[in-house]
Image (cartoon, rainbow, N blue to C red):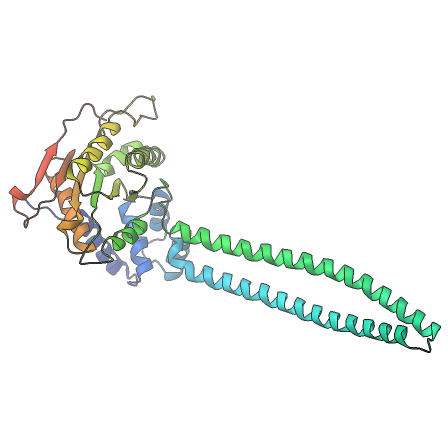
Length: 355
């Protein structure tokens, strides 16, 4: 079988070359931003990236990154949140210190009134002054106590809001903003856990699917329709994956599923179910009719075939590349010995319709 270049590697090479030509510093956040722009998964990002012109300053790149890839700029968010937390806690401590002084003064008044009451030779005038002062102080304490309670509630609410903001920012790292599926970052995190014990990896399988000729289809549809189309495909992928499995969108028309089973028949059943649903559930937004078979190529690999997460992904990508080299709309299961043609299991489903 003819070997083809890994599509992910091809994009990576283009990104590295483009960054060098444009003089963009090789920072991780810059790389992901340029990668997303070249992958074309977010048309708005692509347009704004191009609008920056040939000479893209780091300031302009960071402004774009904060808008579309906020997880790379979380240090700024955390710094701001830490500052707000420190300010809230400083105010709270100041309030408590004031309360401490106020309680000390109140205690002094109580002591003075008690001394006047317990004196055998009671000075009624002095006692009256003490009782009056104690009455005024008690009323002030009641009012101050209410203020303290309100202040404590307000500070608690403010801190809870900061916590929710931090949790929301954390969650966005692992969600694809277009489809709502897990992101590549979430996929990589889950993949790392598979090999937490490299001597005994979790038995699972990886499926990577890519809509054939998605770039051309996207151009024909236009950005808005292409986005709705991807959302439909994402719903199919998510519906077929089990509740314990992880479905994600990598970029463009590329999707991944981490299935926690190593049974080949079960994995191929799931992939075939995705393909079957794509032939009936994806509709044309112009006339509301089904588009027919959505041509999609798949690569499959099992965790026991790979010694680490990198090879697990790489082997699955190679299987996907073989599917596309075979003409697309094909499923390839990675073999167990080297890369000889006999070690690939390829099957193809004939299209029942088309775009």
